[in-house]
Image 1 (cartoon, one colour):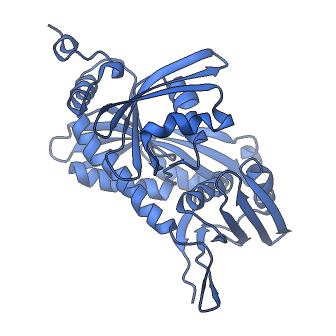
Image 2 (image 1 turned 60 degrees about the horizontal axis):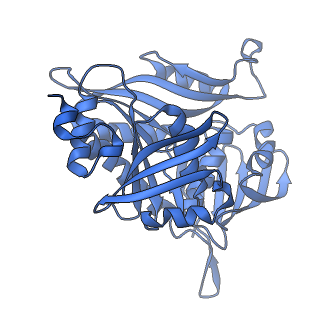
Image 3 (image 1 turned 30 degrees about the vertical axis):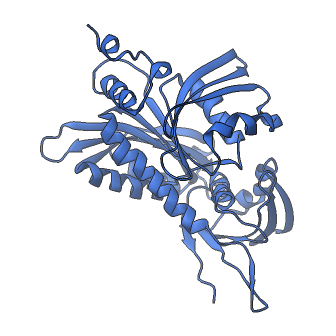
Length: 370
């Protein structure tokens, strides 16, 4: 008798509690054979998952989606989502785990097309009721060191997927046409990234990695991490993956939310208090890259440019969907972001990600204001 006959589970559509979910995913991802990876996405939300259908009906951006949510166990839901796409009507199942306060974990092993163009698109359009968790490259490396320690193993970076934006100045003629998405497979890809950063602004979109046992070199986990908080399980025990990777992602989301929290302008004893933070880069930011910022933010923010020249950029932004407002200055190798009348942690984190998508990955640092 087959495993699926014994358990009574053939797909996510038939999962009926947490135990069946754990057994189902462990069986699939600890056996050999070709199969779609399990994609997990950590989200931030304060609403009840059972209200998703109501919220979706109020947003015109979601008119081409249909969703049904069913609670199958305490804090565990099964959803069916469908969308009219260029390929026709595309639908699929997913699980939603809300067992951690203000955090949702989505699970689906459906097609990559469904994940990218239906599932992720739907929840992105639920902003500001639902928001994403973001990683830049330096944060990915810190995160993966923690994952390695959780497994008590060692890490192998197997692939980097990066976006290269060419710098307009001092770019060798041999590199002028080489831009866009790039995949690095080398074992020394980390060193190659450093070399590339001399001529390009780099955005690391995804990092594939293995975790192996320190003593036996046995493969414990094959996975990947994207900059929008999507982790995949390609090989490994699901319970270990959940405890060591997913819950670590959730804790990372909590810590970064704390970093961005309580930053809007306030008045204390008739004195205005500001709580800015910066994105710092290893080199001076190119003026041509700076001038491209307004056009690349126009779909998400109303923008007022105060100064858009060399060497200083100053602007104010307002988040269309959420209402938070920010002051942005760029000078030399530093971008300073100052939340103004409203600056929620979700909106602050989203803007930080948008800026890095334009200028490349930097180091995010708090500013001490006297």
